[in-house]
Length: 99
Image (cartoon, rainbow, N blue to C red; front, side, top):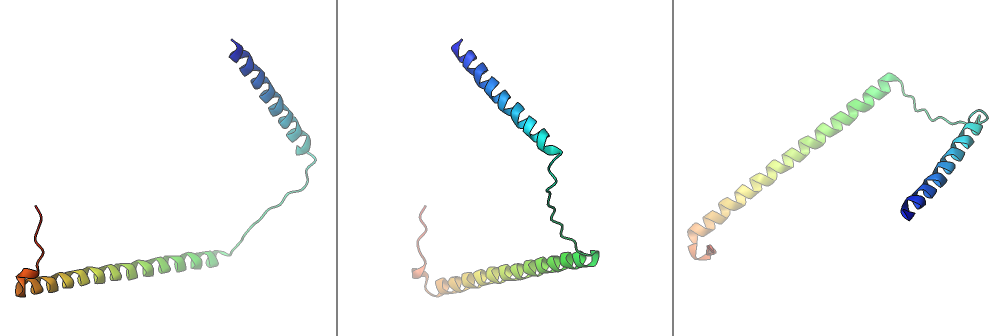
């Protein structure tokens, strides 16, 4: 039962510290007049234009990425066609498939 008494002692110490912290908070609550606020205000039209601009940039980025992906796929198909043409002309260059 020694562990229970140690637990109780630790629990009591923690409870004391929490109560003291709560008392300190309450004592400073009414006397603290320092506060700071940060506000960033934009008129409605500026915020709308910012959102529209971000959306357009995102759409342009998607368009260019999609175009590049199509070009890469086309390039891969062209290389495959060229390789097939080479193998047709020189079948001995084609690597053997391992089972």
